[in-house]
Amino acid sequence: MIEVKELRRSFEPVVAVDGISFDVAKGQVLGLLGPNGAGKTTAMRMITCYIRPDSGTASVCGHDILKDPIGVRRSLGYLAENSPAYPEMTVGGFLNFICDVRRIKGRDRKKALDRVVPMCSIDSVYHQTIETLSKGYKRRVGLAQALIHDPDVLILDEPTDGLDPNQKHDVRELISGMGKDKCIIISTHILEEVEAICSRTIIIARGQVLVDSTPKELKQKHKTGLDEIFRTVTKMKKIA
Image (cartoon, rainbow, N blue to C red; front, side, top):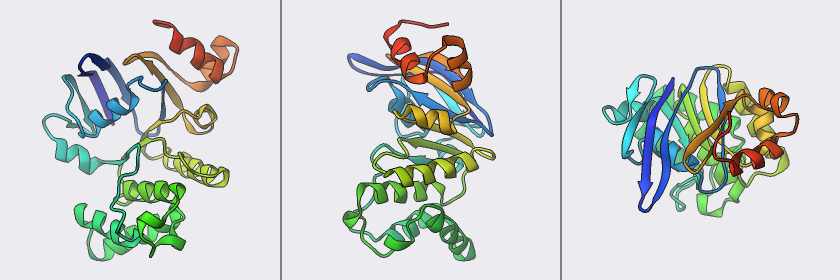
């Protein structure tokens, strides 16, 4: 459902993403790992059509990011790094605005809201303005807007950032459940999260893919935990 082909993007003089390629299929939850500045967020912004690559391309559900960006945006839900929203809006007003953007109307809108509001546990803050919410609740509102049109593809940048342990558990359970029927990419620094919900792991550093495997296979191969593997791999130039 996602095909990435030789994507490259630089912010002179820094090469943020240096010709990465990978595919993600339906039913996979891919954990995108890397140190700060590795190129994770830049890669996700290119796949979601927020920025254009210098070269290479990608497709989402058959829609090319360069030739059909509208088709790409319709096919996916994107939770950005900072959960951008309009602070003066109420949660309900914001989600209804997203429904307007997504052209979700009438009964379909009611069904969408009835589904995502309890799913993301934002019932209690539905009538509050977004500026009054805690970081964790803002994150959950961001997740709700990504899910509201029930997309086949989800791209989630640090989805549990700012959540307390109980909230993190709930979101991980939610992602695990959706992962059976959707194609999901998650960027995270929480390695236990990768083990808990990801069926596959890519580690990138300096804009390049260094590892593409499963958490289980990595631990079996290197005879150690993901934290030690991560430290070792990201300090090396390339790993087999």
